[in-house]
Image (cartoon, rainbow, N blue to C red; front, side, top):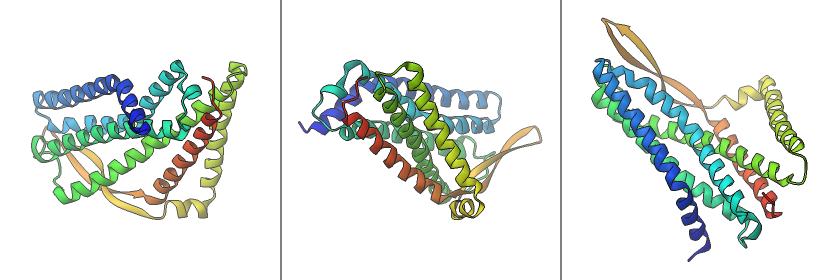
Length: 257
């Protein structure tokens, strides 16, 4: 068997129970949103569910990665495998990316169901084409942000465990210092107006803003266009590669966890 395929199968095996639990909870939340909205005769009640589930999907990938990393810490795989650390990390990202796609596809279908069928009388209609374009862009943004936070977590996890021989307080201090330093640097960059304006200059307009309106004892949903900056998404993509490369370098030193 191809070593990479073997790693992917192993990561699928150790994460599938968490994934099915997560998926089950999401499906229950979706069903509850529709059920409660139907019971109250307010189909617009599914909008908060869609919004909250979208936010939840940003933390899905980091949580899955944290679980898998801690499971590897118990087996000490990093110390004894002949595979490169980058292969171990890519395997986990492949598995989590597959899960993320499934969950976001489920959310997109749920949104379309509410927009074009269950809530068609209260949701402003935008047409399948416009909905499809917005869904693609928003799903890309969710994946980028989710995996950015995942790469940050992976890097900080490796930093923490690379300091295994140091006192725990020093290890946490190093992690917190990195977080503080990065946020300080980002704040300084964004405070420079010409650079900040350049970063947020180019945007893609999609239907991503929704507002509730109450009229004649019924809630309705008005959809509005909003601009999604392109350059920040590209920069986050670059940061993902850099952080994962640094994490792989630390793990290649056979970090003892």
